[in-house]
Length: 196
Image 1 (cartoon, helix red, strand yellow):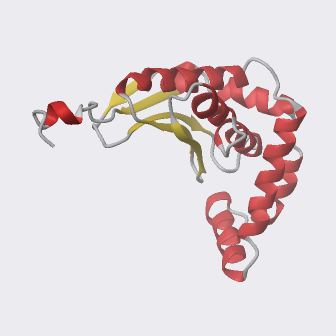
Image 2: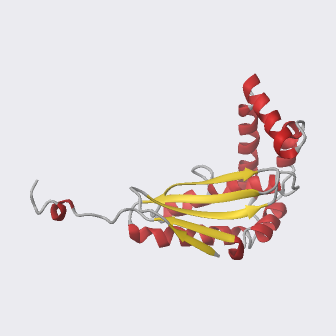
Image 3: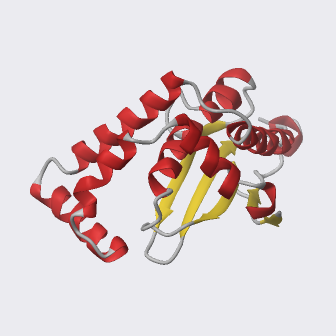
């Protein structure tokens, strides 16, 4: 595992990143589903853990980016208190590891796949969106029609596929963590010498 610390900033941020295969890989649809299950929306595992249960982080999410030669899968969460940073980092690592230990349930899988398909349909509702999708597929995958067929591949993803790609690509040895801690908490009374 590689680790970098930068900052500080107004709000802390933990980013866990993994290198994943290029867009042409047959594993890309399963990785997209995995990213959605782990970190997209209020029902995602990271939101349920970090925000709802632990109360240590805020606005967790993911960035799934595949290009012609390689890809990146990033999971992140903001946090306010310096003491919450290690807790948020541990939660991200634990939830990623949990995906590699047992298959996701049918509800999580169906929800993630439906969200991905709905987003793809929404993105291609107008001519500009459709042109963007076809153009990106032509540049990244070398096949414009692949942009139209992506939904079919997402629909075919199984819980076993998600488990397999989690084991293959999300090991601790492949992880890079970037930490941007928040500025230290300041007591307003102490900072002003007790003056209003």
